[in-house]
Amino acid sequence: MAKKNDASSSSIELPAGYKPTTKEPFMNERQQEYFRRKLEAWKEEIIRESRTTIEALQEDVGTMPDLADRASTETDRSLELRARDRQRKLISKIDSALRRIDEGTYGYCEETGEPISLKRLDARPVATLSLEAQERHERSERVHRDD
Image (tube, rainbow, N blue to C red; front, side, top):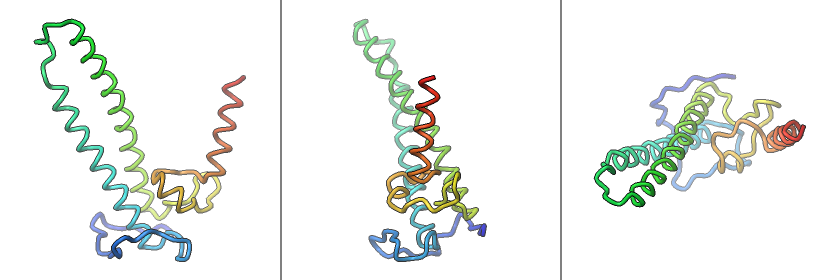
């Protein structure tokens, strides 16, 4: 079942405007390549945004004469750093999804082993649970949180 692909698996050609459909075998090579490219592009975008943030954070706010301006800038920086931390965690999820593609387990629910819908994967390519399993998980969390 597990099939190892090289990082240079771009030998698979995708037609322009290709979108996975249920009319083809689930997680065939084309679908795997589609999601690999989608995940890699998402990761590159996050890294690019992070570089911009780092450059902005390196600007010296100590030279701002107005304390209110300085406080506002510090608050903005704090929010930006929290957003970047969430994106750092997202990169970890993207890397994990790319590993699952290499291992041949991408697109299958970690809980049930059933295929995750293509619509769900297209909207949330790092999904590890089917919609039904995710909903069960969230209901269970709510029940335990209310205890």
